[in-house]
Length: 157
Image (cartoon, rainbow, N blue to C red; front, top):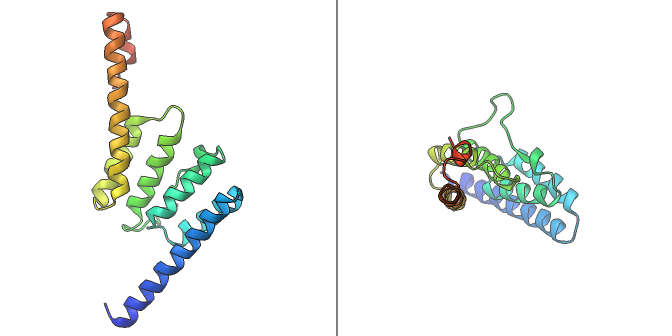
């Protein structure tokens, strides 16, 4: 990369960080809707920013609007760079639903990981999802011991 290209990349990254910090400050002072709008705009500008996706999902959760927070590709316009972020954002939004659809969360996270295994948040959320899955399996096993033959319909498929 040329010196000019590197400088432009650094400027873009600095602008992203500044906009993200401002949106998070808005959220912290109670301007949650403004923060959500700013973060959505930030994702539109920088679709490969995992931090923007995380902040947006967290903000929509604070607004109790996590169901509408899934970030899907529109008309196949996702670049290969932004695809893992989109998949991770969908998985994160699904993880905040009540109850979370753990198999679907895991599927989206594995898809994101296949696109870019170097994103640490994917692995962090995978760990959480595996813990939830194990907790569910333990509960089912305990129920099985206490009620033999009844829980067959509760088993994950």
